[in-house]
Image (tube, rainbow, N blue to C red; front, side, top):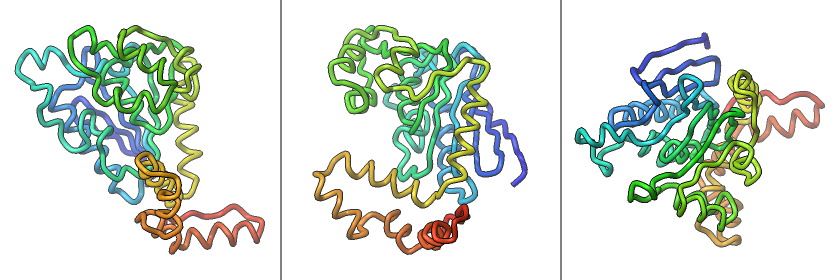
Length: 266
């Protein structure tokens, strides 16, 4: 697959092999209005449904902002906070159904409010060393809805509640300390590291990634034995596909033949 870049207005994409880089690039600060959210949803839906794509990287344009969340100016001009964000919900990712491919967030600057919620919708988060984070919704008299659901499951409860209730800022080092960020990278090396990680993931077994992501989602609301039964009885679609796949046999054969496996995604 040849390299390809596309301009979707406030969203730019770059495709190289099995990797899709998605850049939110909406002056002045990469804030998301309803129209931008719908575009992002279409981009991530197409990524999900394209059998030739295996990994996505999400980042922001420029060096100052990843995403500050909801565009308050657009809201003042009539965008409803509970309006139609398009497929995948706000930012196109956090409510995208059956997103069974790895997504890396490369946080290149300020990630606050819905921007932080967008980042934690990814599977792995790399942060530039100058990145900062906050959930300032409390100060504008509203609720950080997705963060209120997700954050207490990702980091210690009392820390999550402090961040939600105070809206205070925290830096990349603190985010890393609480396990919210996987790695801190010098700003000028962020995208190089993100692409290195994406290439590593793209070389792996896509059907296994799909099964892992579906199992993790399913297990959030299940007792342990129920979740195990869903796997062992092949009640999850991605697990059933994996256990009947060529890739399942290829893994065993490659191990026995002492060679690297060739993953076909089928």
